[in-house]
Length: 256
Image 1 (cartoon, one colour):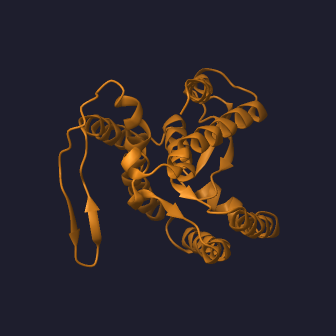
Image 2: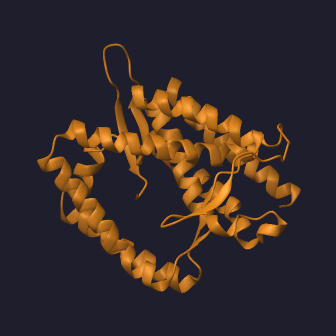
């Protein structure tokens, strides 16, 4: 990556986290906040995805961490997404919401640890430069290869991410929710390749009708988004929380 690209990427990080931080102190107009944060996330994820084109030996993403969508995946994606979404809707409608959210919170807190570690380890590695690896990498029956090799920078990020995830699990603060959401988005864009324009067009057309049906044709998407107490959405304050009020928020679903 050229020096000018590094400057643009750093600028995108600064803008994104400046708006994220300001959201704690002031009410930024929701359209402005939404456009700036979502555009910055896409820009950062797209820049980081360039590593998908670089071989592992040259410092690119490990082959085991790359995912390439096929045409069959593109066709199935809206169907699988619909099944998952409707299952959550049924769970919230007929099961105890607190129990469902507890299970979901545990899952996202665990996944969030690795998303945060992966997102910030590259930045921390600029200061903790040791490449020595600890842990192991081996294959297990039924599971396959398990890679638990970590560098000192990744160990530091893993510890901090675990603390952060625990605090999020206990407080469910909207600022922490947004950090998890940002990391999930960046990691998804960075590691998953659509493979070709044809696959991308098929996927977008399928998701276009998926959104129309579940958002405008039923109350399923809105119900799940409002009931789901997890980082599957970015929250933009319309009224800041206070001792007297929990605040008021607009949300942007991540499409997970």
